[in-house]
Length: 341
Ligand SMILES: [Zn+2]
Image (tube, rainbow, N blue to C red; front, side, top):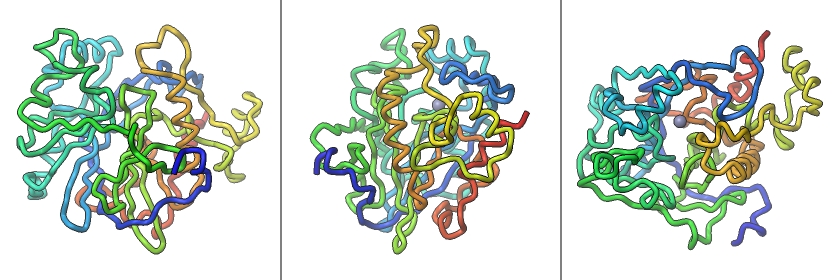
């Protein structure tokens, strides 16, 4: 199947996997202007979570998707530490993903891989806290762009200790014949329960993950990493127009934009001052358009790594997200609270 023929908005069949969210860390004072322009007072500097996920298929194969932050962030590569200082970020991580898994007696040795949406310090965590049998899975081009890590390469954004002594597998989407709603995909476990999706733009080799949460009826969560930094970059969209129940402050905002309620509130930042924050703005924009096709489906819930609007509504590990669809999802538009004047 080629991308052109994959226009029918149906998702492939397969098994389901258990998926849980870990909310181990947060970033405060995060500026959003480098990612998209917005004059809403509530969206200048924000406090956001840095979600990680535990995914286990029915044969017991287990992978993590993203690791959030490390507790000892001053030990990050100097390039990353400089980013923290430049943006005047607050980093809060008392218990990292490993600590939280241990607190629940999770069998760490069963984790076959840490899959990274991308390499930024708020996603890579501290892989050295996991056994050497745990592989690191990264997106296309990541190895060449980032390795060797610091201190072997002074200006690398990652540490050599993030990957040394373990298998590093770089995903190659160029030879895949699987496309899901136009996105190159890879069936990670081979049973249709976890697909890695090529979602380039924000960072080199950026990937998302599509996890099937139930079968008959099928439902999915799409772990979107940093494809968006706020749901207003994704919604509204032609397939997911603004609900008529939206509060007046939101409709006033749309009127000022001459937005018919079918276009996203915010667009990828193009100002050259912020070029360093986005690897490829054209690709990032194209990725969002593709994700809007997933978001138009009622049985797909997209969760970005820093979606503060989901922070108090999703049940955290060891609870699972698998029942989100049967419970009924009212969280898709929770972010509209950010428009309150
Ligand atoms: Zn991030």
